[in-house]
Length: 303
Image 1 (cartoon, rainbow, N blue to C red):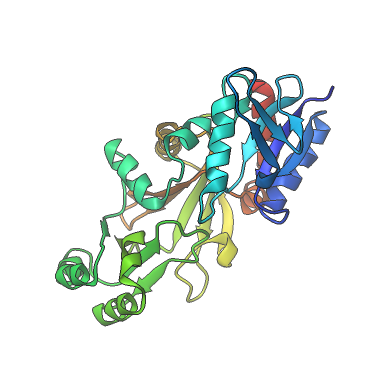
Image 2 (cartoon, helix red, strand yellow):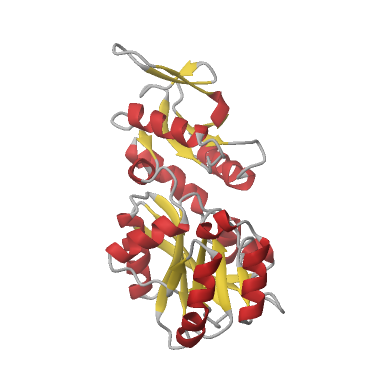
């Protein structure tokens, strides 16, 4: 019986590049990849011989090397709960990538991350979390005095830079805050703007920083995300930044992740966030590092 890596996505299009690459490299190494959707999971919960099933087949040590989970977030949270139930039932027998982090933080948004970083001495960009329009008015002068404009606001569950806003003055900031529902204000982080217009994505795999990719904003766009047209190139990581990224992965309980580092004008490094299911198309293209192969080898080593 061929052992396989089971990958989970919410749709066939989600993480298509990453799953395709994983399958391509796994096949070269004689490992099968079972592409599954989260809705293909089924659980048989009983005190004697509880089972996790995927597409009707029980997941066992005999047929599975490990499980690789992509983004599972829904409004209801049903798939994050299902992912974590599978991990709890299987983690002592089958390697479930990022299991420690998923069980500690079912959802790990940017606000939660900043709390974790603060507790471990990880450098972060000065940030405020605000829950009412009145607080924006109260803190407006303080933010302008301490940070100056522009000021950044980003949604705590945003991805690929799509929710990041830049305000050039207090009028813009207040106008935007008045447009959204007040109950949603607490979902945003308000941050000091770093004018360098580039950041570094570090992929950490099995405790080691694999390399760095510099992402640079283009033209009038202030966001450097690859998905928004940012230019990418290989970045030679310093020992300090490698160790910083590895520390972030460790404290967040992650076997595989992308750590985003941004520097200020004095070259000081700040952690922006950690991505537990980071994409790697731009990373492979710019660095020449075969991330997919390294992921497969991690599963084989842990089998």
